[in-house]
Image 1 (spheres, rainbow over the protein chains, first blue to last red):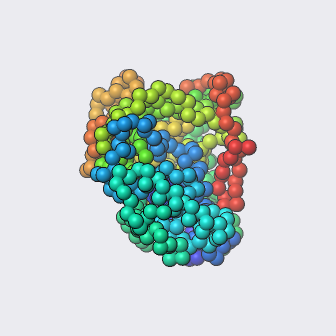
Image 2: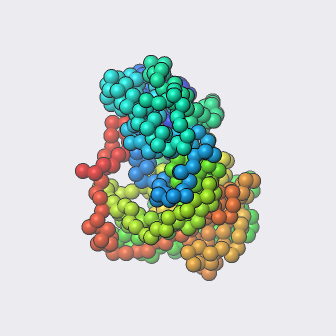
Image 3: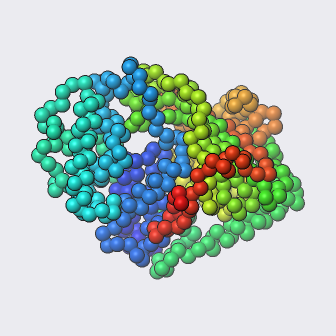
Length: 169
Length: 356
């Protein structure tokens, strides 16, 4: 494998992005395994990879992660607290905004959360998101607009303070 | 990404970007590429450029032959004592090596018949994260919760494996904002099978070498570039294989022999209790206090499970107790309730399982 300069260049050029993709979606201990599975699949298909390969790698990573979530573990489990008047979700005043946003994403549908991740964290243009999700770029723009709207509603519902004008619909 | 920015959500856009959980990841470097390629070479079985498809398995065939010879020798002798690997880098302490030698003596499987199954039960206290966030993060409610997996694995590997997963009550909160954990009982969360036998995690155990030296080479090659250190990652990977309960006696003996060669393996505690059994804990303890412990029954030396300390308090410790029993058939209730997945290899070369 080290003799294949083309494949080595593929790894050098894209493994960091795949690792970040995985790190945003699975527990830390599973990230390296996910990355290895993705590039093992890429190796097996190296003679038939598309020239614009990153969306293919992300789409493959999505499949690997879906399988991981289905068969793994207990250590990746996410639990939802039953509603408690004094529960931690009622008071966000001391919680870092990063956590506030991530909790809000967890309230969205998987499709809404995923398109937001691809747009804002993977920083993909609409045509690449379309390749990853298997839809048209036009559909991506519509779905992204709706997902942002739903996220705004969730944040408004969770927040104990008025949302600044900049994000009010 | 400028095409997707809209003026009516500038602050939301900024907040989303700032919330990226991967913002602090270090940049991918040449060493990372080298380590990943080395790991892929091991998995892909020595592929060379120019071939249109992976060249299968010359290395795997060698391992398979070694596995056959090792298993045959074990059957003839009834007991295999592995000579020390003498790798010259130091290894486990003498006390820990003694524990591992007892474990090798205790690693014996009864004779099986082709239609039978190993019923493996892993009873755990595991980490549970509430909502988003990382376990142990000060802003995240982190707790320990009971879970259990029962697996029926065909002894000859020719039939599907069956799984029953159950989730149980919270045991304790270990960090994060104070929260009232709900009082829960045991519920069955998942019952399933597929049309193929299962693998134990990342490894196909049928082709892992039973020769300890060759096995050590595989484990260390696959540990490169992962985790917080080569030795700690090897211990984690060995623990993962043992935890699933699939490893046969020959493989368990070989894994214990590899553990004897890992520098720093020591007796961490000589009187622990795991699911009511008294045991001795071996492990590596990192400077942070984080570490994996393998537990061996005090009375007969057999492996009974593991603990994993997260390093931020004695309460933040995962536990897994593993039992492995030979049975004639899968539980009828599991067969009746199981979701049956159909597995196939997709265009990316991945084995994917879906409900039919």
